[in-house]
Amino acid sequence: MSIPNIPGYIEARRPASLEDLWERPAGTFPDELWPAKALRQVVPDPIGWLAVSEHFYTPAAHGGIGCVLVHPDDRDAALGEVTWAGDDLGTASIWESADGQGFDAGLATDSPRLEFFVQARTPTGARLPTVDVSHPFLWYWDAFPVTNGWRYLNHAGRERELIRFTVGREHWRVEVRALEFRQFLSACGRDALIQIDYVPKTAASGFERVDSEFQSDWAHFDFVATSDRLMGDRPGFSRLLGQYAVRGVRTAALPRFEELREDRDYPSFIYGMDPATGQPLRHSCDPSTLGTYFDKDNSRLHFLTPINFRREVLQPYAAEPHRYRLSRTRLSCLDLWGLDLSINTAGLVDAYLGDLGRRLPSDEWGHWLSYNVPPEGKMDEGRFRRDFLNQWASSADPPEDLRQAKNQAAEISNRVLGGPVWRDLDEDTEAQWQSLVGPLSDDPTALGPCLLLMTKVLVDGIDPTPLKGYLDDAAKGELSLSLLERFADRIGGTSSHVESLRALQEFRSKGGVAHLAGTGRSKAMARLGIQGMATWDAFDIVARGLAQCLNDLADLMHSIEFGGADTGNGGTDDGG
Image 1: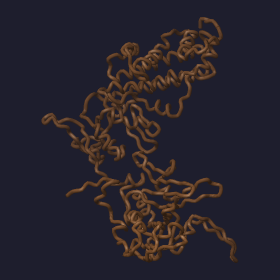
Image 2: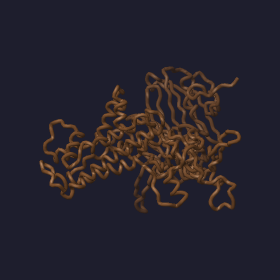
Image 3: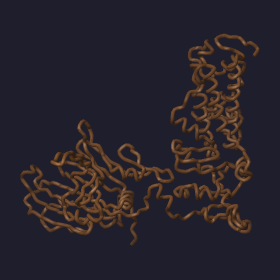
Image 4: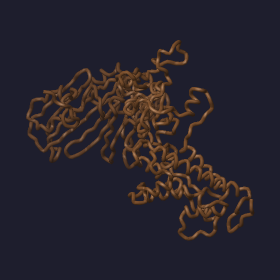
């Protein structure tokens, strides 16, 4: 009969632990004194979370866990004892002798050769214990602190938990990812000694003392069960004391610089269709299998073969704008990796086959494969001219044009009015704004969040203070758009100069973006000029209209910057 492995419920293939290897000794001591749960966690080759430091005390039990690193040649000598080794590690000391003053950093001992790895301590004046971890371990993984632990980024930029801990005034527990820990041990040529001291207690008494010992090439533990009236209402107790070794080994968990050296199985992407069979044509993205301009013939598929993806492939990256920077020409992750791309005439993402193998991390391949589609549409003209004709050419980028228009209008208004009309954005909104490329789906609902962000930045972001100072006749409670419209009128413009902003605001109110859509949705879409359009095209129309609006306002302000239409405060047009 086949039994599934259900983590937390059914572990049909659980690795052999000390509980399996050490038979419960004979005797009349109560079952609760045999530390089965603690023994179950002792395995020579851990793969999940590994406890490396712990302290706790309850009426039913108390104990702790410690961990030090040991030179492999000294491992057997250290395992010859059950008492903990390296008690002085983690504490700096100074001493005086006839030869002068000595200093011990508390990082290593000579016999046996041990090194500090982790501890929790409560410095004088601290309310809670502080967790100290070996800096070489954190440096090796380029780890960064988070609440109650440390994490690191893999080559793809994905966060991975490395250490987690819980601390209280009288207890703590520190755990490390076992695969990352064993990989580190392999890299630095060390093993680890995990030390355990566990004392369960019971109200039962009157049973005979039992002693037992387990010793192997990787573990050494003593067990004793007895009773003592001095223990109060729980005279029966046992003690498990000893240590076991965890050896270093190269694992699947690798730091970023090691990931790049790993051999990998390159996936195959759809690059075309076979006319005879009607089936997709696929080819590996392994750069070494692809042709270049230096090939003798055209027998190999070229490195720069465009591969198409649905725009949804970009959604996870757009959802994390602090980590990923997205534009219509490039996707990048911090300073880790970047992939050039473009949007073709069919609204699909274009990326070169060779770049998928060379620039895109292997962790991302599966995601991109799921959105890979047969070729359709025409490559963006600007990209074709740049990449294949070696011409200096730009690509249409309405959202980037809008960002530049907003920055220019804010800069000029700051000079003219003494303060920018558009406020600086908070950190989160700024990150979203900089990565706004348009709807990443053809679903009609995909347009709403993009227009909502535009409204937040361009309408809600208007600062009425410099406008009120210029107009000098603002009514109490007058809204920002009204102030901006009157300002445009005052300096020689008309209401048409803010029409795009008013249409955007109306769509938020009536188009079902910030509120439930009502009968005014169609009217609001028509006012924006996007009735019946696909989401991508509709977004571009709105972005272009808003960019033109801001550029027109900037031109008006620029004209009065040098003595144009109206100088404010009731001034009159001088005809300039």
